[in-house]
Image 1 (cartoon, rainbow, N blue to C red):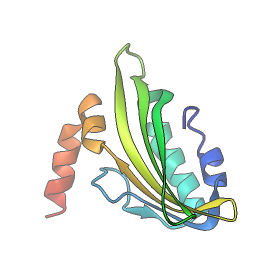
Image 2 (image 1 turned 60 degrees about the horizontal axis):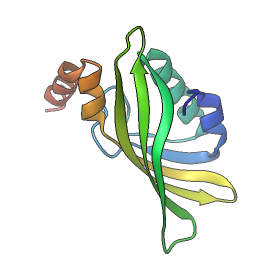
Image 3 (image 1 turned 90 degrees about the horizontal axis):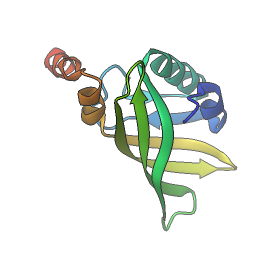
Length: 132
């Protein structure tokens, strides 16, 4: 994620992987339904994002009773492009891995904090208003 390579991220996933965003994430669909959508979706989102992820910090991996399921807490430390402003975005991933490939992800990111840091809270409000 630090180098924001959608190709590298997608290659970790199975062809029929599902990547979900259960929480409100303006500008993103609720889910990507396969490896190609993951590649295209993250590629477009990261290309449009005015941030550079400098580091992933505070990674904590929780084992579960299901050997295929991993829960990971982490924080992305990012800098807003063209400024010296930086911020930390916490998120939690629930992943199912089978045969060495990620087959399902639920990505719980703090999208409100991200929108605030980028000055895009109005986009969140517009998204909520439009969905009524």
